[in-house]
Length: 274
Image 1: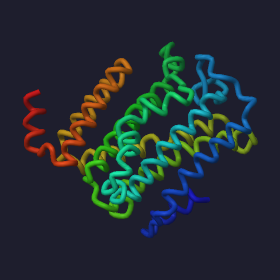
Image 2: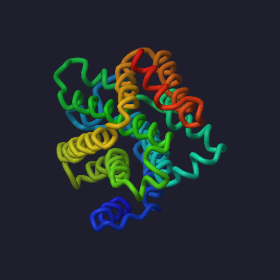
Image 3: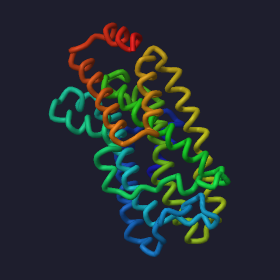
């Protein structure tokens, strides 16, 4: 109901910022309930699973993992809504550093990780390959890149009301986390077929990519940040320690810019030389 209401409000041009906080919070609660309910689901066991499996049956690990992704969406939604407060109150800085730069290197370890490697290893599962590409682009564009801009105040003091792009990212994020699990419930109840669930889940991917195109087009003046994010995508396929080292580098640059220890011209000159 919240998802439908937030979509209707966006269409009629009357967004309600409160829904962008309660919707992902409800998503986390729903994921926890799903973990308590669908205990009969099989473990991942490093096999093809979820929408990529012939039967489209999700593993229990996949459901539990969704709590983490719903949590990422809740953090970013709150960052959109309360951006000015969080950036101007030093007490929130540890939470910002954790949520913006290190969400995949700290709390990620407390949740199962469904590897795409097991679903794409034979090279025949095209849907899994497309989904893997989607997740990588979402992780770095919707996740890191947008959060970097929020950290530096590039989207203003009230992004959720001033930028329709931010609201649509939250809506699509809600589809990818909360609605994705709800589709499994509909499938178990027999209201939709496994194939219909897969199509509904993946049908939003092109919309995500269209929003990412808008992000890149809107922020062309911040090409240095775009370059850092693109390098981050390449580093994503390297070792865990290298990923942490690179995020620490990006974090140091953003902190220096935010607190006036470095100006933009100096940064751009240094990156150009590098």
